[in-house]
Amino acid sequence: MSRSLVLSNSELIEKSVANNEGELTHTGALLSLTGNRTGRSPNDRFIVKENSTEDKIDWGDVNKPFNAHHFDKLWNKVNNYLDDKVNYVSNVHVGANKDHYIPVEVKSELAWHSLFSKLIFISPHHFNEENKEVWKIVTAADYVCDPKEDHTNSESCVIINFLRRRVLIAGMKYAGEMKKSMFAVQNFLLPEKGVLPMHCSANQTSDGRTTLFFGLSGTGKTTLSADPKCSLIGDDEHGWGDGTVFNFEGGCYAKCINLSQENEPLIWDAIKFGSILENVVISDAGVPDYTDAKYTENTRVCYPRNFIEGAIPENEGCEPDNIIFLTCDLSGVLPPVSVLDENAAAYHFLSGYTAKVGSTEIGASKSMDFAFSTCFGAPFFPRPAGVYADLLIKRAKRNKTKVFLVNTGWTGGGFGVGKRFPIPVTRAIINAIQDNKVDLTNLEYLEKLNLYIPKELEGVESNYLKPRDCWESKDAYDQECEALSQKFKDNFKRFDVPQEIIEAGPK
Image (cartoon, rainbow, N blue to C red; front, side, top):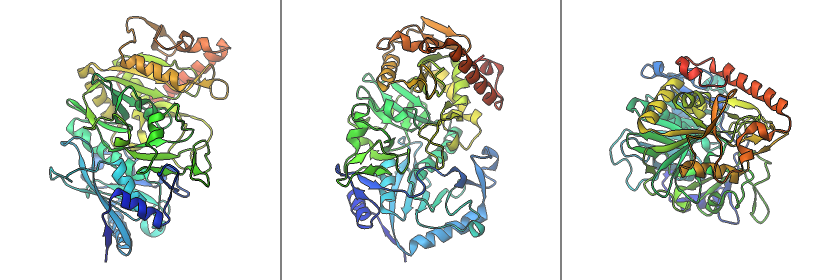
């Protein structure tokens, strides 16, 4: 007989410690270790292939098909496994907007997974008031799949079934799979409503203007949106609909590697009782060492939005005044800030260029490498990329939203030669954008990169703005610029888009 418990956050923390699932740090945060899987497992992620959605999904290395009959069989096996032991149930929403939320029942083997679901998703005052169809997540961390019998790729799996509104996660303790699975679900469902789902953070200025920050892990999406001068909407996943930008989540999932109180005070202060640390090394006294990557570079903290002082209570804002594409340029070629027109915005959104720094995937190399991730989140988008790009351009054009490309990567040389832009310099750029202090009539054109950059910017030393001037060897810069431009062009060959978008990329 099932022994399902519905517990408060404090009770779940007590259970986690009592069950040896984790321990408390000196600030009261719960620390859990996730074993050999410290990030997402893309090779174990599948989508059930069935008639109602088959023609709408971009099948391939990211969206791999899974047989519907095999899913049903495995779903029943895992549920029977959980029903033979104590399990934990939470009822949450994914999406802060009443027209676009998904009600979700989460059933988990571990108490701290149940807590995670309540922190990262939205814990509503009244569950499913609009009486929508409920999705179900089942997560069994210690269940061991049999690849031969269960038709999985390994002992673990993450499988989404759109027809049955189910997500099955088995054989892994990394909690981020819950978060990203429901992100993929919203990414599939919302475009049919004309709503753009986005892998971005969002904040709001004191006068109520919204800024979106697109970027992959390690580019600064969470850090830069957690700005004491602005009010946070959310740090990772949002929808852009008519008159609204709304958060999918009720919490944040920030990286902790090299976290400092000086550079990231809001995140630092959120690590207290009621939050969860993942895979962080602590001393015997329970003090975290955020510089230690013993378990992984992908150390994390999950905390509710109300731990961020001044966060927007409604969890949504108005349509964006500014969009910022964050790229971590490994080569040191790109300028710290560029102004993008409509076609350039489409080009760089589809390109999603960055470096694999702080990857969230297990098995990712610790060495740096170039990466292109369509829509700044290719692993999470089930539909073809053009669907999302078209929605972005239509909404930005209609709303007269300004778009910028901001490089949080290297300057004065590539990785190993130059240095990363200091966070205070990037913050000054972001502040200038949000304060409307970028003079769009006083721009300089970088021909090879086909980018326009400000000639001057308040709070930023002029020598930072022109990337070539920061290099000791101008010939070396030119060679790297040529190489990066070719990488852009080679990657973009796979897109069937209008010629004017193609021509908006590097020459």
